[in-house]
Length: 204
Image (cartoon, rainbow, N blue to C red; front, side, top):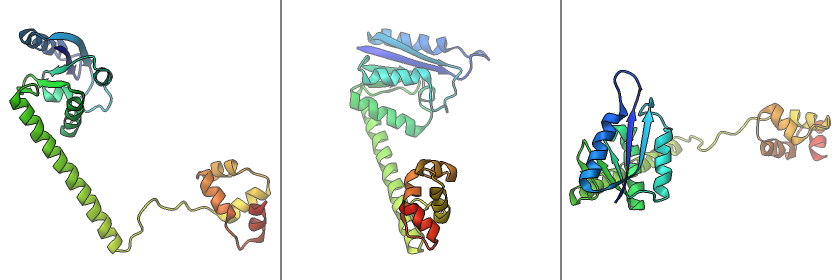
């Protein structure tokens, strides 16, 4: 089996050395008879960072099926949050890639590991369902209170638009000046106005 190993340290100082993680990960692959197909190491990168160069490359290679299993030293070396871990596990499962966390003893290639993955997946699905239900309940409550939902309308001055059009300004130029979309300016400019100058200019 082709295995990828991932290690991360948040700083290159204070005695943190990714080699400590890598050595144990390589030894694990050797014991299992797995070929190390790639090593991905992020150095000086916080676990809370959205973007990690080597982790991003690992995920890209996963979709290219360049390895069959991923070995990490510990969950928190790999995932920045529980939700991130669950999403990654779902992705690996869909790609047919096994996931091993050495310290926690989780291995999705074993029956016990598959059971843990199933439980985690069920928890994630329950969490998503609860979030959706809370959002729906919030919308129902807002409607009951008579609140207007959706994107707020952009306040535009149709009279000013008409005057600018009368000066020969384009829709795009007016939109840039008013800091709104061209479509918003155009629709406002096409509406009948009580100001005869604005109405005449919009009709040009």
